[in-house]
Length: 205
Image (cartoon, rainbow, N blue to C red):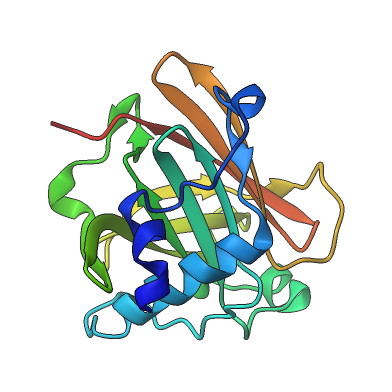
C-alpha cells in the first residue's frame, strides 16, 4: 500500500492536463482500481453497515472535478436480471465514496450527522471520505428506486431509477455534469438499463 500514499493525498484526483481542468472528468480505470483497493480495505473494519456488499474491485468507476471526487464499487452478486426483479426489500448494489462533496436533498447538503465518514490510511498518508451504501428496491408504486444509505439503516435519499440513456453491460457506469457554480449531477448507470441522478454540492459546514 505504501506506493499509493501520494495518491491518497488527493483521494480520487487523477492527473489531468490543463485543457481538461474545470469540468467533471472520468478517472482512468487503472487509477480507479487502485483507489477501490484502498477504500475497500478501509471498509473491512466497518461492522455496522446497513447492508453487506461483496465488492467487485475490478469494475469500479470514478469521476472527479477539481479536488472533489466520487468512486463507486459494484456488488459482484448483482446482475441486470436481479436488479430488474428487485422487490420491496433492498438489494445491495454498490459502495459509493465521496470526497469534498455531499449529496443534496431539497437543495441542501445531507447533514454530516447522517453521513459515514471513514478515515483512509495508506502508508504515511491519511484522508477522510464519506461512504454510502447503494441499494435497489421496489416502492409502493411498484417502481424501482435507488436507496442511498449513510450512517444508519434509514436511507438518507431515495431516487427514481429511470430507463438508461447510455448503453453498455458494465455493472456501473458513471457520468457527471455541472448544474451550478457549486453543484453538479452524478449519473449512475446500471447495466446500461437503469440510471439514477444524484445531485451533489458543497458539504455542510
